[in-house]
Amino acid sequence: MSKRSHVLGIVLAGGEGKRLMPLTADRAKPAVPFGGSYRLIDFVLSNLVNGEIDRICVLTQYKSHSLDRHISVTWRMSTILGQYVTPVPAQQRLGPRWYQGSADAIHQSVNLIHDERPDHVIVFGADHVYRMDPRQMLEAHIASGMDATVAGIRVPREGASAFGIIHTSDGHKIDAFLEKPADPPGLPDDPKSCFASMGNYVFTADALIEALRVDADDPSSSHDMGGNIIPMMVAKGAAAVYDFAGNDVPGSTDRDRGYWRDVGTLDAYHESHMDLVSVVPIFNLYNDEWPILTSHPQLPGAKFVEGGHARESIVAPGSILSGCLVDHSVLSPGTFIMEGAAVSRAVVLDRVRVGARATIRDAILDKDVVVRDGATVGVDKEADRARGFTVTAGGITAVGKGTVVE
Image (cartoon, rainbow, N blue to C red; front, top):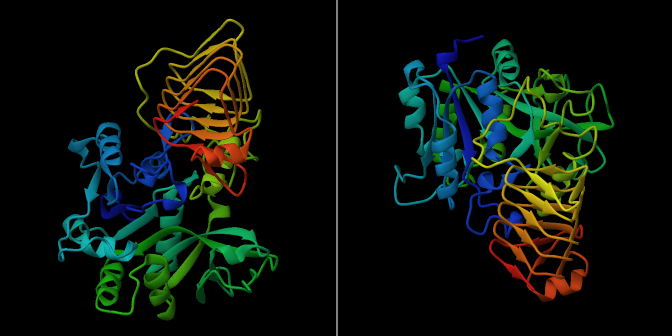
C-alpha cells in the first residue's frame, strides 16, 4: 500500500439535508447529533482516523458554524506528525458562486490536492452511520490499477431502484453506473442482489484532477461525483467496485458486521437509533477495537431517582430520570424527565425537559425542547400536525429546537 503521507482524505459535508428538517433548520446535516453523544460526521472521521488516514479536509457549505466548531474543537490531531482534520468552507475560488455539486466542491477546492500532493485521494460522504476500514478499500484500489474505486453494498434487487446501482459482470470492473434504474441488474454471484453505491470513493490523484477539469468544462454536467465523475471513468473502463461485505473491521459482531445506514430522512434517523438500543444491538456503539470518537461534555453521570427507570435505552451523562419510565429510547446529555412521565421509542437531544405525567412516543425532540406537565408528543398525530410539528410517513413526530410543548 502507498505511504500514509501520500493519501489525502476529503469528506463531503456541504449538503443541506432538507429531508431532515427540522433538525437541519440551523445546522448542517453532518452536524446533526446522533446516538446520544455523537454527531453524524464523527462516524466517517472515526473510520478514516482509525484506518490511519490522518490528513483530512472536510468541505462544508450550508449552515456550517456548529459543524466547523465541532471539527475544530474535537478533531485535533498531531501537527508535529503532519496530521490534521480541517474544515474547509466554500471559498468561491473560481468565481462568485456556491458549490454546484459534489464534484464542483472538490474542483473549487483542488488546491488542497495540489498542496498535499497525494498519490491517492479518498472521498467519503459525511452523513452515514457505519464502520469501515478504508485501508482495505485503498489496497483493493491500488491492486486494481484503476483510476477510481466505488464502495458498493449489497442490497436486495427488489427495491434497489431507490439507489444508484453499480453494474458489474465480473464483480470487479464497473460496466455501468445506473441512477435509480427501474430494472436494476443482479450480481454475477447473486442475481437477487445488487451493488448500491455507498457514496465512498478512492481515486488515483492525477486521474481525479483531470476528470474534475473535464467535468468543469462541460456545461451540461450537474457536477456530481456519482452522477458525472464516476460515469466518466466507467466509460473509460477505469472504474472498479469494492464490495463492502468483504471489509473486516476489528471487534465487529455477527449482528452488526456490514451495517451501513443512510440517515437522510427523519424515519431513517429514528430507525437507526432504534438499531442501537436492543440487548444485542444491530449497530454496536460499544466496540472499543474500532471506537467511534468524539468530544464528550464535562457532565456528571446519569442519575436515576424516585424510581426512575430505563430499559433498552441509552442515557447520556448529565441526564436525570426522576420517577419516570424510559423505554427503547436514546437520551442525549442533560435530559431531565420528571415524575410520572413515559418516554418510548424516542430520540431526545440535549437539554430537553419533559414534565411530570407527560407522554412521548415515536418522536424526535431537538435540543432545548420543553414538554410541559401532562403534555403529549407522538400520541395523536393529527394533533401534532395541528401544532406545527413534522409528522413523517412512518409516523414519527419531530419537534424543532427550543419548542415549548403545552
